[in-house]
Each structure stands twice: as C-alpha cells, then as structure tokens.
Image: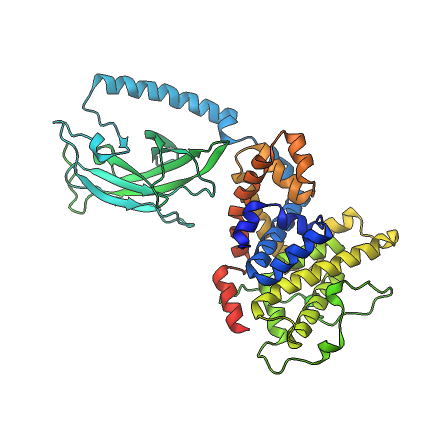
Length: 242
Length: 227
C-alpha cells in the first residue's frame, strides 16, 4: 500500500506504533511497511519529535497554557478590536455610499473594478505571494503610472483545504498597527491551489501592507496565511492619476 | 548534504552492547542464526555511516528512547545495539536495500525498548520515577537539550496552529498522554472522521519537525548516495 494512502486511511498508525498500542498482527503488518518504505521511518521520526517536543513543553509548563489558549477571535482584546473595526467599517460604508467614486478595493475579477468614468480597469502587475521565513517582504509591487487592477495571487498555507476563503488587505502603519483597507469573501482556490484577487491601484500608496487569507472548512476553520507586501512608488516618481 | 552542526554525544559513541546484570529477552528481530556469519562481501556501507545516519537524522528516535528508558546511557546502549544488529544483517545480506536500514533500526530499537521496559517492569526498584524522566534533558549533553528545545519550539507552532482548544487537546491526549482514539472521541464528543481530520492537519505540519534537525527528503536521498 502506498505510504501516504496508509497514513491517510489511519493517521493514528505512527503514534500507536511508538506507544506500543498495536496488536501483534497489526505491528507485524506495520513493520513490513516500515522495512519496505523509508517514508514510514520518516513518519515515525517526525512523530517521535512531536512526542519529545510535547514532553519538553509539558516539562517547562508551557503546554497547558498553550492547549487552553483561546483562539484569537475569541479573545477579549480581539473582540474589542473587532468592534472598533466594525464601527470603522460602518463609517467607511457611509463614506462610500456618499461618494460613489471611492474605489471598492478588492475584487475577485478585474471586470468588477472601474475608473471614475466607468471603464473597466486594465489588469497590470501580477504579484505572486511567496511566504518567506525571514524579514524580507513576501511580495513587492510597484505602483503603475496609470490606474490599474493589480492581480495578487496567493496560496493559503494550510494543509487542509477550505471550501471558501476570505482575503483581507490592511495597511501597516509605522507603529506596527494595521488599518483595514478591504475584505473580500467567498473566494475559491483555482486548480493550481492559488487564489487570485484584484486590487485597485488607486487604493494603494507606497508603504507596507498585510494581505491575510483564511478559510472555512466543512467542519472547522482552516488555518490561513498572512503575507507582508511592500508597495513601492513608480520608478519615475509620479503618482498614478485618478 | 545538509549537515547540522551537532557534536557527538558521548554515550552514542559506545556502539557495542554492554553486558547487563539481567539478560534482556531478545525479540525475534534480534535472533541471530548461523547464516548471519556468512557476511556480505565489501558493500561500501560502513557502520560509521549508519551511525552518522542515525545521529544526524533520527534524533527524535534517540531522544524518545532516552525519555522512555529514563537513562541516556541505557538509551544509547539500546540504539547502539540496534545499529550493530542492523549492520550485521546488512553485512549478511538480510537487508536488501540500504534505504531499508533506517526502518530496520527503528524496528529493532523499539523492540529492544519494549523488552527493556518489560524487564524493568519486573523490577520496580529499577524503574525511573517521573522526576527522573523530567530531568533527563538537563542531565544529557547540552546538544540534546538544544535539540529538544528546537523540537519544542516547532511543536509549539504546530499546536498553536490548531484552530481550537479541542483540537489541541486531541493532539496532546493522543500523542503525549497516549490515550486511545475511542476514549478521546467519547470525551470530546467527536466522531472518528473529525478526530482523523485533526491528526491529518497536524501531520501536514510534521514536515517542519523533520527539517528542524537534519532530515529532509532531499537529505535522505543524499544519505543513501553516501551509503
């Protein structure tokens, strides 16, 4: 049996083998696979490290706190921030309602973004978000001279696949706080695993932005990914006209 | 090949099994036959290469055995014995391909550990108490302590990435407390599919642990080339 299939069918195998919880017959079958395929040994090694790491966390007293930690969206500070954002969002909606020329921000299709005269924006830069494990930016975007729809491609970082995803764009202020810019919901992954969204370049100004993707699975929320983007002014130094 | 800067821990270097005051019953994998003496002619695989493979890439196995035995020296002896047996089997042509050696060592080491625990269970005075087990990381070489901290840091990220306290409980109760799936499901009101989903999610992140110290898929292939 293919190893991946074997662990997919029963993800408890490695844990039970290391805990000596298998019957004689089951252990023999598992050990046959262990001798045949090096990936089984790797799975056991990873599981052994998981167990050692957990024991170390328990020993240091960190584990209990970690297990009981409430998700971010249930914490009082987050709820307070969410309430503030809600008030801000209502304000933004009112402002948008009063001024139809204010760009809608993010869209799932370029055809949903228009300029002041009602023409569909031309698709400009395509930026693929590549999560980097360092201080570098996950993507850099140069603002175009003309107002355009910027295509942003991102891949959710979770191993599980969600049914639908949300993408939010926020500007990162100098003090590290974030200011929401736009949110887009009900997005689906393409076959290549990427999600594409389009941002109106008129919404952006030089600086740092945070692009977060999160998903909702059929049974539970799916862990998402956050990308940090640097938006640079156009090389000519001119601002994009409205 | 990616080679982390790890210093050899002294007990690991002692590869020959030490005599024990009481015989440890051999598992079927440790039984040696007359055929074992007909060693495979020069194969290019040295025992040192096998030791290096285990030392550099299977730290989880070694540290887990150390914690289970409650004595780093006993753990090093068990692992050393497993390496010796594997090497002899390889020399005797009983292991067909070099990539099977790691799996074989896992199997033998865990069988030896099982036998060791049975022996210790029969001698309550020889059993390590929980305070001894907790102190192992501090007593072993600094390198081991450092590796355990690295593993703990990555495990912390894996646990933190689980979306609910319930999912985190599933992981700790299954992998740490070694409770069975049925009782965890019953207590947390989960069905089997939900339980499996939590484990699948964690498994997806286990690769981080392999790259934490040594083993990556590409490295493993390099190790085989070395062998």
